Length: 267
Length: 72
Image 1: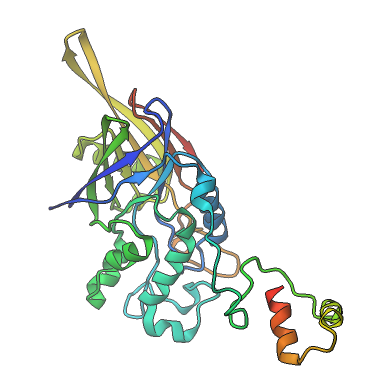
Image 2: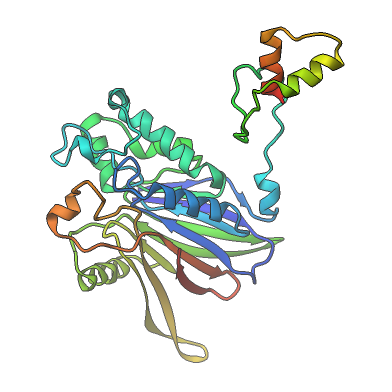
């Protein structure tokens, strides 16, 4: 687990800061909706007061020695010779896709796909991708402490981000996984990927403050995906396993530093 | 567990400023090897070259003609 502190200088602490939490893009996979992802990244690049945090499984990176390997699972543009250095290919692709938001990526964490490739090939995939993304590359889970700065005033905001785990396929199962994750971390915002779903929830605990009984609220968000379960002319792992199709995109989270207010929308 | 810090992200500038692409000073010198970043199509029907050739009082060698078209 990693801990990262990052300062984000903003024009006003009273204005909403927008965090785009993108995970499970599965670039390189034939099922990745790369066109949609590129369009969304370009939109973000034009949005004032916004940043990106990346939640793992950026690349599919399923190599020949992986039981999930299938030549037909690669994106159309990949050439046979590209397999001679799959990681280099991944670096180039990730760098190109996220170039429009360069300098505004808070961090990138590790997903199970990066982890599986790293374990087999003795390379740190996350660090390699973070280098081209020009952001810190973190482990599977991390506390990311943002310090919003405006003039001489600073407001901290704690994010816990984890790629997630498990094999939940129903909306209820995925929600339970999110609730379990929210119990693990004490943070203002908890981000979880892996289960390819678009769900957000808030939970509160009571506390006694000088004004009486107050509450502390956590926001948990499952960070979506850009991997189609069903693709024309190709049977993916998800199709063979009978998974439900999922919405493609990512959460757009508005955080108002001065008030701590959080609202979640979907891109 | 690793504790790290990273550089400050400054969002006080406008997005348009941050998206400004610095002019490529080498573009003219390397026009023969660089693609047009805007992806604009070059008209190769010779009309443009003919106008320039007339302006310089003669014809253009093929290499210069091609270079000129790429720069344009």
